[in-house]
Length: 333
Picture 1 (tube, rainbow, N blue to C red):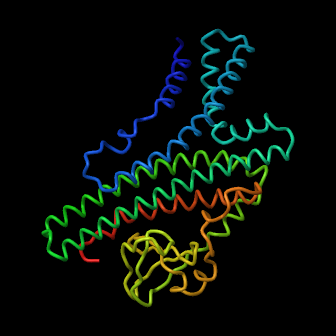
Picture 2 (spheres, rainbow, N blue to C red):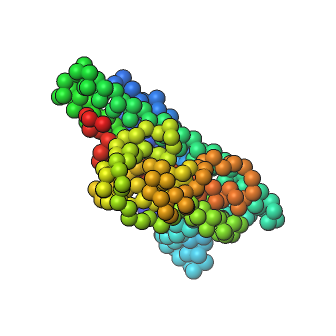
Picture 3 (cartoon, rainbow, N blue to C red):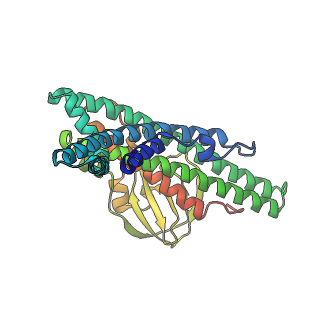
């Protein structure tokens, strides 16, 4: 087998051979109280991995064939044909990652109304899957924070020693870091898949990016007037995991559901009611989460909510990552 062809085949086998779940999240030793939530989060990533591979395969196959044809047309020998196919596969893979989806849909539907309907159905399904990942990640984070709260309670009641409490908190922090790594992998796959949709949106819903961008306000510096608890997400049901002190310099940006995203100079991130900061943060805050928007409907509306959902999940991952490496696991709340 010629080397370029072998490389293409090897790459395809590598993509197809998905890592086992235990390889991604570790084996279950029975000590993790949040293991069911972690399994659920990781399982939601299967959808995005499968679709990404399928989308890339379209481009790779087309590129390889085109590269081989060009080399053959120029009178190349079998080695040059193989090299041409390899080059075409690389180029096709790059193009396929961004345009494979819309190109395939165009081939299926020449009628614009049918094309829009097909894309709307695909985006609706995508939105539902993003919602699944978001809910699973939220439940996992809530479980970790509840575990940390129990450790604080046990330490305060002197049911465990300081050394035991510190070791337990370190264990929760390490597990949260692993959770974030799992979520980051899903976020990356979601983003790659999203790039294909973005290319389609440019054609069928060019205003979607601006509509989704309306949720993002400009960050502004604020000096807090009092101690403000921070939540892991913009939701009254989300756990409070840390706080900012009075007269502390922070940056706030409008989030949704009446909340603002707060970031300290030390990189701690969390959410607090936007009304506490007044001005732009309160005025620009959205009244509802993008995940509360209907998952079915017009392709333009769906496109905007798809972009917002992806940004929301990415923001959740960044906030959890800051929590894993910053505050939120002190023995005294």
